[in-house]
Length: 309
Image (cartoon, rainbow, N blue to C red; front, side, top):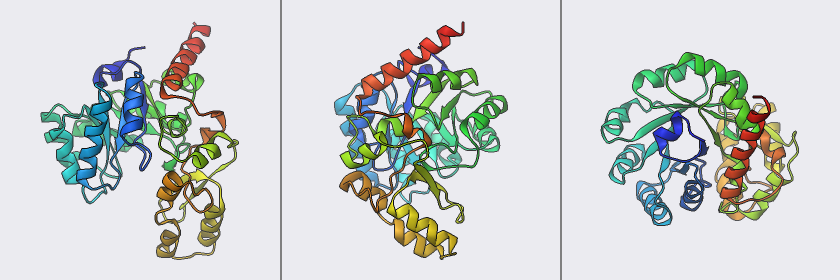
């Protein structure tokens, strides 16, 4: 299954793994790339030397291309931007800001740049800055979200830019992939589906919550602060939403979530941890290998498209 995105990234299938903080480390990225998709290491707010180490560990596990997600608000972003070049990383996805300041040196080094966008205006800005493609991410996604749904955002972004568009948010199987392609996407990016992968280091408690999730089990915290985050409902989200309703100051709200993602991912704290997951979690019924996930979504997509030819 080829597309303009597989040509840009050098992967077999147009399936990209989201660059999730604490989740998207070298084991998962390597497994996705080995399975024919495009794995991504999530740099998040990690120190630069840790990011370099993750890249080298990934290289030891696969000779397939993979990328790094650079969170531009990371105080170490300048160093990470250079490490990506020094280590010969194939591509970067970016979030939480504008990558324009790094674009020239990334492009000069042959690094493909794919910003994550939540609006047409940002997509157009990124195209003008020299992006090779954009990820149009809807509010169905887990983690930090925008305000427009994927399947409303996607066709509008496709119409707004000439570079390839990757669909993200609310996609977990071949039907979702086929629908994204029908709306003009050249690839899909999945996060939640890979959180529950066998190769994911995420704690079993967290994975179990995703596998058992129903369609209504996610919620969005932080709407009042301007920093909305989608995660699965638990004691922490109930307390956070209660405090938001009461008008508690941002600093107090942040105390509640400080370190909560790490607690969920590493320690398996599903009570007070942040269980970032998209609305699509209800479709995930078991823990599968990255290879089975990718083969399943690709064959499912081909089946759906074949039925409508």
